[in-house]
Image (cartoon, rainbow, N blue to C red; front, top):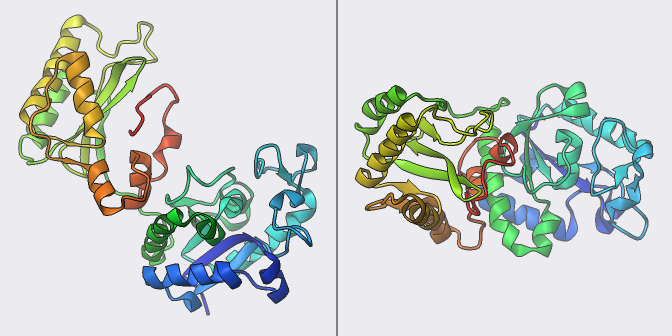
Length: 343
């Protein structure tokens, strides 16, 4: 039987080591419950671990498999801060890669930081969870491009029950992703280095015919660095204010151009009811700092999400991981771009 879905855990706990298989006992119970609610048949998911062993006879702590950097498996970062998996456990990775090669699933659920480390070459799980990406590093060299969806381990859900709806959302996404092996990113068109003429062409072509307009600002050092407008999910415009590559830091090359850009921004904000993310911040910032008023805000994605899932996080990066098929875009942005708390 070929499996469309594979779930990779971390290592055996005491009960799992006794039975010689993963996800039995309490972890198996919570996994079964979440699979059932997500509409996943457990018998149709191949279950395995990165390490099909218990880290030590008396402990589930993965640090027992770790040592200093000079003893590490080549090409891998630390599993946790300053702790590198020792080269003697390379055989466990080889076994995992052979299982993946044999089963050839359409999607691999990396349940926990350890499989994310093994398959994506990253340390930690929080910033990458929920975003499909391809295998990297040693896993990519052995397997080629295999689709991986990281999420939290069932044991983390047992310890911290508020993670349950997050993992549930990831399982529902994994079920959708299991229908095909490739990553399918949404097709979008972005205008990112516009001229003044481009601003008005974009407005005439896309904004005027639309009933909706999403508005989002990015801030740093007490000023707006850029502001984005999107009349639909397919197209968006970025109006830059700051250009870190320019000697003077300004995107617009004359005061007249910058004033024209701000008038364009003011016109859109004051005459198009907007959709925001954490709009109380954006609306207040625009008014307090630049005297731009946003009338008749239509919706706020942070508040809408909070009404649906009050126990979940509310930041834009988290919402993107739950509701979109984009990659974790926080990794694609320069550190200086924003200081906004809920961007």
